[in-house]
Length: 281
Picture 1 (cartoon, rainbow, N blue to C red):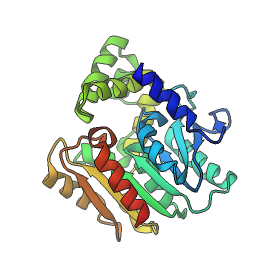
Picture 2: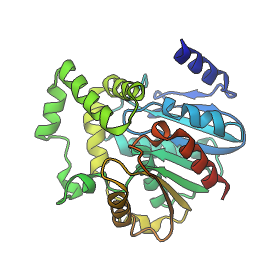
Picture 3: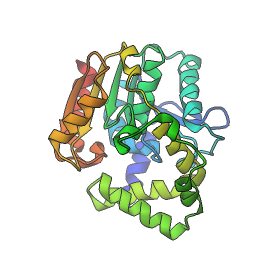
């Protein structure tokens, strides 16, 4: 019941009735609040609901454009290449809506997307990157090369053929490792299960293929990074971020010590306080 009430209250916050679906763009957007524009990008498989508590705070002073990408939630899937189409669609959306100098706030995949857009020469007031790296593939594979990431791979075929029960078990295991409370693990797991399977497989290949480490030198917008320390601890997290972001001339980074990947769930007060500080600097 409380969950239903929260969703109803979140809906009541919507001041604009704008809802753009994948028929026009490779995403759905809800616009909430008034003020300077902030674009909120969720992580892989997540819907815009990940930003529920965040928008409840920010919409008091900002116009929040909350995205859910194609193939996730109830947004129809699109043909691959998925991630390049998402990026181009968001850039077009900003132009069409005449959003001047917006802030980009992105978690995980959404953070990588924000970095990619800025590295392509687009101008933004600020980037706020939540536990995201310019090269997820390099984090996972020591001998990583972007060209190694192809759609037609044995691993992708295995995922596409995986039965529902095995996929759910895998999703549960992953959810348990990236956020701490069981109720939040259930939310994250259900997003994974709900995702279009081909988008899950090929979209993640797109993310792994993306390597922005050298392109970070092209970014002129201010960058704030809010980073988790789990599962490897603060020193390893610092080392990883230093290595991956070394081409970025200047940025501010704050670590949510003890938090897993979903900082907004694991340390909500810390997250909101540091987010507001970044916006008000």
